[in-house]
Image (tube, rainbow, N blue to C red):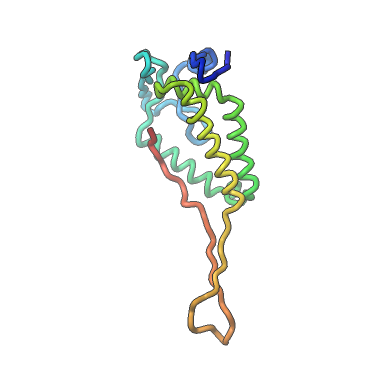
Amino acid sequence: MNSLSLNNIQLSVASAKTFLDRGRQKMFINGEWVDAYDGSTFETIDPGTGTVINELAKGGITEINDAVDAARAALESDQWHNMLPVERAQILNKIADIMEGNIDELSELETLDQGKPLYVSRWAEIPGAIDQFRYFAGVARTIEGQTITSSISYQPQGKKTFSYTLRHPLGVVACITP
């Protein structure tokens, strides 16, 4: 049962439970699922019932630094650096496609984790995240520089000069979000 409507907000957690029943969840660092380096874990609690949902790897500063370093290396790699904007957009759209194909499961997991009503996860949170991937896929294809007529009073040898801007990604950041 993966149906959902505003009139029927029963949580069908079968698919979410299947995901959670795989055991302790790991962190994704440098292309691999890993436990916390020191073995630390923490319990995630269903705020609606107070019951333990699962045990998660508890990363620390070392894991954060390794994740940031891996992300920076990927960003600076020839594979990503030389990737065409259209290819980057395709990757972001593929993520959105996968999320759309799993919207019920993602909504259930979000509701279990946050304790919010299922309809909020299903009709706002997850679609909003999907929309962000689609939006930035579009941005990836449209980021461009700008050519500006120079306001410099001295023009070398009487020739017109111009200035231009070229936009580059800010880089890798680590965020702790709610």
